[in-house]
Amino acid sequence: MKRVFILIPFLVCLLCSSCINVLEEIFINKDGSGRYQVTYDMSGILQPENLQMIQGLQEMGGEESNVDINLGDLANIEMDSFFSFDNEEMLAGLNQEQQAVLKKGSMQMNISGSSGVMEMNITVDFDNVKEIGSFFELMAQVQEDDASALPLSELSSVPMLQITGKTLDRFDPQSTANSDLQSSLGMMGMFFQDATYTTKYYFPKKVKSTTMEGAKVDGNMLTIENNLLDIMTQKASLEGEIKFK
Image (cartoon, rainbow, N blue to C red; front, side, top):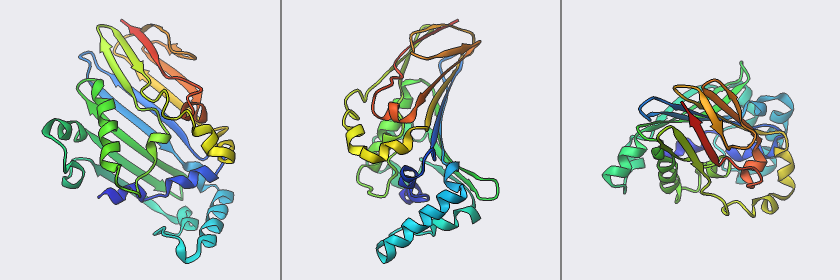
């Protein structure tokens, strides 16, 4: 089942300007439970000029290419695939507590060439916001020995959160992990210049104040929009606190 992670060769996005935008949404209930969802919108790949470039690159790979599908035919694909992390292969080697956390997550891939949609989202239903970070750490763990796994950790910030009373705090566990990413990307970094990383928090009552840089408050919703490359290279931070009623 791990092979679901290569339904679409994610790294192709690196070759297409503005091909990926990330939307992170966190819904908080009164009791502290809620839902986390991160959506990777890759619809830009389905633009004709990008499909032509992708097909050309695949043809250059010749017989050595290990991609199972013809990427140039993405415009003809209609697929809506759902994957639950509650399966034996993903849970193997984890203790009961870890399994309980991983079972809270699911992933969905939606590709519609006719509608020009290509999205993947990961959803985590949590009892405590701390479980969100634990889920992504476990997901990275089970993918560690899988060379085909998608490099999601490079495209989003692991959400380490906690709620104390009426205050939500977010910490950045990757303060040094991506410090050298800018130089390692080299020329590829230019392709992320217009890609966005948007985070939205939804609270049961109005937001009172926040220390998060660039945040916009609208009633019980708080929104922050950053450049994706700035998040990847730690030039922008998602750290801070949010006080709500």
